[in-house]
Image (cartoon, rainbow, N blue to C red; front, side, top):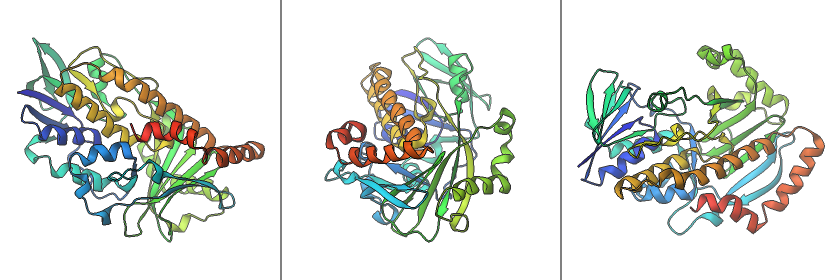
Length: 378
């Protein structure tokens, strides 16, 4: 029997645990630094067909449709005047059993946790040291306990301390010179995904269930000093939050201030490069492997996809994981940066040309298959 330590209980780690739970040849434990999982927040995530196919392997299709939403289109809207530019019918990437889905992140976490026994999750524990002991990995944890494992999967997020410990160097993400503002929005009624493009910002609104609850997420270009980035209280400060809302309101016909609830802000950090490790029994997954800019909405889907590929590599005892991942990561990273640039244009001529290009490209089947289909279907 192979023993596996999963460091981090986010989407990537919990999905891997669900896969391992179905195979008696594996024994696993999850080590989570938080004291509990936050299942109260109503913020949304998008899951494209590539991840829905993998979730359906563990019973996601049995989840109540009331807790999910299946948008038909992605609308592109000029935030200045609320005029729709064009749309993409994302149903073309669905198949008979798998649909592009939006939902609350807490709904997905609850589903993943349901299949994981409580005694396999260890809270308030972090990895401290890893040493080779023959073919085994001897792991020291923050509670001073040692244990031997056959594999270590590091999935503790973009600020992974475990990644630096295992790599024997400081591996830190890069500030993307942008801030995310997220929350829920009231008095909105549209069952599709809507992207509102503004000057140095964009925001996205989409439903998270069948109960007319909507997620709001905005990405705002904003350079912050090192001192500001280290000031955790800044992103909870009401004046700072209102200043971010003000940036949007000044450049948008929509008055968001009175309709936004549960607002939180956080700086966006991304990976500078793909860090791998030349050890066949230690792997990185999720944001610990690579953190993308958020403008392509593939973070959660890639966490699931990565964990499935990891599981297949461990099950089949091969070492092709990073070779298979690198092309996909590079493709999504490029698309995320292109979207980020295109959504934030402020020069009127550039905006005019962008809108013409969008109208053409969103109806060009070859482009859509290349830009979206290769990601969503594979």
